[in-house]
Length: 182
Image (cartoon, rainbow, N blue to C red; front, side, top):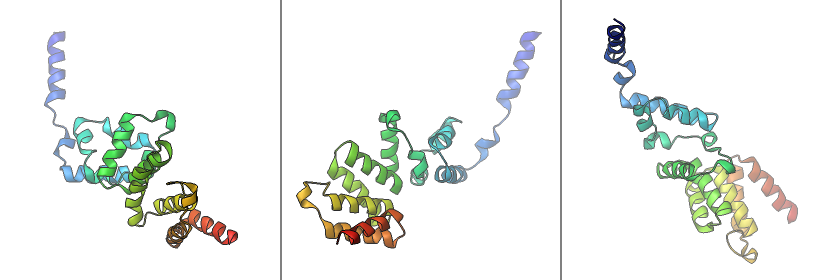
């Protein structure tokens, strides 16, 4: 009797179609994109990966990875690992400007791979990504890319001016320091 009851219950659950499976991929990708761009912390985005196999596969779609926001990359240094690095590179490959900027900063300052870091920051800077422009300006001011003798003050000022024009507050501050030093 108990065995029969268990079979009826298990059939009930397995035969019921999941209404989520009926949604088209485009709609699910659109919903996940909105979540990815508006998430306030990494767990907000990553928790969706744990919901089901289908969402896990769709969540790494290039359209979604290109929209992942800055707050989704807020990983503390002690939590840095290969999987975080791979995820960041996936976002870079999908054309995510925030990911290019962050990975560029990490490579330039933490991993001491200056050329690769500068190259990664230049990609979003070309598209008027103000944090990238300002960071590249600071690199030019300090001569961080090479010896301190090779400071490119004019290039730094031009980059800083561009970032300030686009509304970056830090760039305005840097320009103020430039004018103060003159």
